[in-house]
Image 1 (cartoon, rainbow, N blue to C red):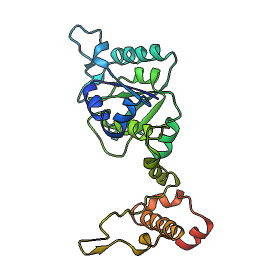
Image 2: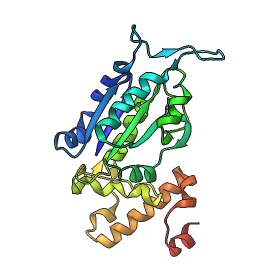
Image 3: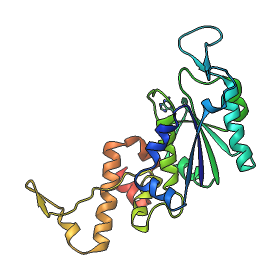
Image 4: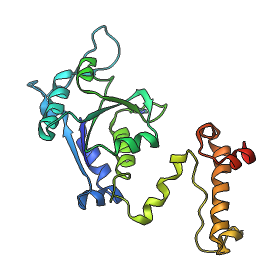
Length: 238
Ligand code: 6GU
């Protein structure tokens, strides 16, 4: 899978996504991540990429030309118009289900805005998906693009080892993960729940399932409406 990230701050992307699991997946060739510097495409003599908003108001607006030309350079490379995601708080909120869907694409383009936004006319031409990562305002789209790229990349076959991929499924049934414990058996006067030491895998699974449900009810009651529960679980917990 190939990610192209259109940004005024390519160093931010390069330093953020070249480490840990995603960095290793890039080294192994499971992924490529290309940060495209929008400023490289401006036709302005002074390398300017923004201007005042028509109608007045605070801040600056990123101009259409350099954004369009940066995007066009990518579509010429890949030979078609890949889905192009504009990161903005004025949009639907990103969820695991969307990550799974985007992970089916061969190429994805992320467009990161700064200042007060991007000229609407270029967005109309190139953007296929408007996505927010939550109901708060950030200074630019780079962190959201990295969040999305990480969540999507880990769904791509080969990026996670078998061992790492187990924890993928939890949010897909709209339930939170159960608590985890490791050695020592007692720490700070607290023991690991006995059932986890019993060696009875069926009981362990049942306990973890219950912990997932209880934790979701307590911490994210909003998820319960869409949680994938059995009829028996519904009777017991709802
Ligand atoms: Cl995608 N962009 C910005 N600037 N702020 C955000 C966001 C995106 N998602 C939540 N806050």
